[in-house]
Length: 285
Image (cartoon, rainbow, N blue to C red; front, side, top):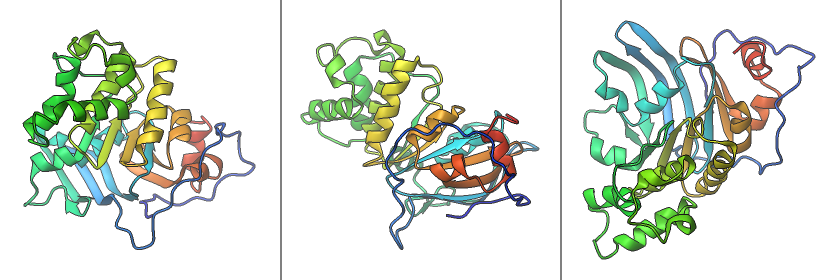
């Protein structure tokens, strides 16, 4: 897995205390010769004259969780939004380099943006349910994109709510307004809504930052289950969360530079770059 590094420096010794790692399954390594789900190749991004990302390169394997950590303003969310072209809505932006999702160039001239955004689901920092019923929130995308017949829609809605670990809590009130759910339930509903479009990739931008610890635990458990079938990239400021849920972790520094990306256990216990170690151990943030 390739990364873009600035001035490699040998890690300092002795090592400072690390983030405590919970027992976890070993990361699923990419299968030999398997095309990665996401490839970022020397990708740079500008807001007007301000460069937010600088020559970022890495790959995200299929059916694994890749976490992006780093201080505020270092370009993590910009990269996430670039993967499904949400930054197109911002005036005076430009890119260089290449983003490839499932073999398709995201910024290629022949890309079908509707199909691309269907394939790449997005979950935001704060829950944003539609002002509709719980059922209609999940059903809206599949109906709009003609992904199933009206007769099969109830089964699809149930499937997505079950996959989002929400069905048992809402099955008797599907016609109720989604805005009446708790914050944690709303976030899981947003995940179910994304699943309704049959994506292969899920992007999560600090999905737990507005949730209490109990709701956060449920979302983290859900992420762990979903990676069996989806490629997940999550931006988080919570290093403990990255250590708990991800297989791979990338550290971004200010200026939009990807300093290091590797297996999560390696990043948190034996980082190769001094700047990564300084951030992990709290010497700067």
